[in-house]
Image (cartoon, rainbow, N blue to C red; front, side, top):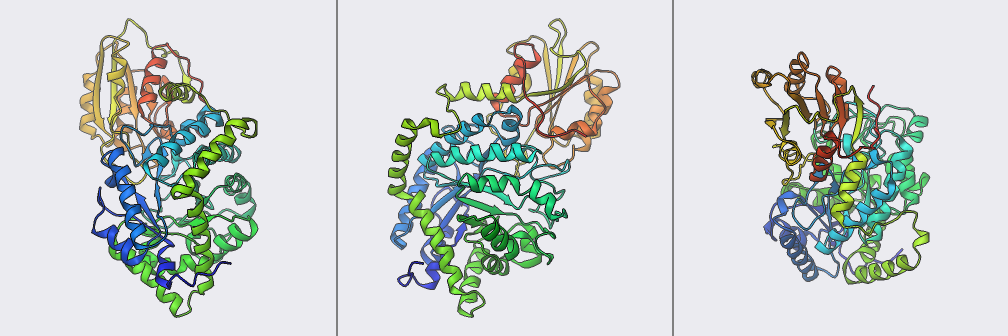
Length: 540
């Protein structure tokens, strides 16, 4: 192990923290964290983004600030998963599809291509780590936080696509982060809001939840993010994986052989902050085996967490050797991914790949990115059933109900430039009417819509569910319209919406409402394109 004698304890501990801030330029919060508390990493959210150009300048200014404070570069990260979770929603960043849409194509090459494109774009902005891919196996129909962020419910398919994404990101010189270990897919509670348990026995966890993580480790993933989820089969105490040495050290490090960075999910999430407190949780996470502690929002919590770890070392509640081992992993990663050396390594890596393409198990398309996205959208759209109402009949008028997503959450960030189905369909077909609703329409609005539909109109209802269960107003609207019409229902996000409504005339899943998907959907329902997506989950 290296000697860290030239670092103070405060500097060593600070390097093990990744923190967020609220400005679109260097502000007092991040300045204080870098200069006074020596934080080693920064995480971006939408609140930090005005444009790609602004974000590029911000990354450079943050690195300059860090250079003045220490000899070490920052690791700058972001959650840019694609689909409905994208912190950077600006021109200059490709609107890549999300995981379940890619899973529906059945082609991991697409997953690799999207990750490689996105990785190169993030690297140019000055971002070194993407907190993606989500390798959770989503096999709970009520899961309010993972859902379409997963590649599906089949563990092997999730593992294959996850490995492809990791290869794509890291071939572009950016760290991939497999999350949320040991698995957040079979939960019915959002850990942003409260505690959750996965009660399965070890054999089941080994076959399902852990399988994609093992493949991610084989693929050389740089980092793995922990889950704030309780696993009784691994940890007998009722504590979440983030705070469990049995999970992080004994299982992930020793049994599974992971040598990269273990990063916590944000400690300000309620599953951690409410029962434990952020500062106490930071100490416990470090003792459990975490290398990088994520505290995303509040300056007071960030400072308290850093101070708590420093004091824990001073009082020998944490052995300093644990800090040194974590620091070694973080600094090795920085040498690999950050700064000029990383750029040089990326150039060399790209040269090697161009001469040794046979060693890469994925192909890379040379078609323009917009063509690639349209192709993926066509291959992902899934017609679950069709009782003869698709394609649309050319002589009949069309009435569309389109839900507008106006409330953003940690796991629901729609692209701001997406057109509605009515706007795009109007380019191909005359006499299209569209009624826009919120995702939580009232019963009164549903009645007004039902009365406004004219006899003979073909009715398309698009649904949008972001929290596990189709909102009551949307469900009521479909029930009322189904009384007199053979509906075409399009699930714009959650494929499980079908389980909560009467059987429609046709049911279509798109997994997201990104621009490429809306274009492909318009072509499909008018008969100009034959969809080929397969459901990555069972609707039962």
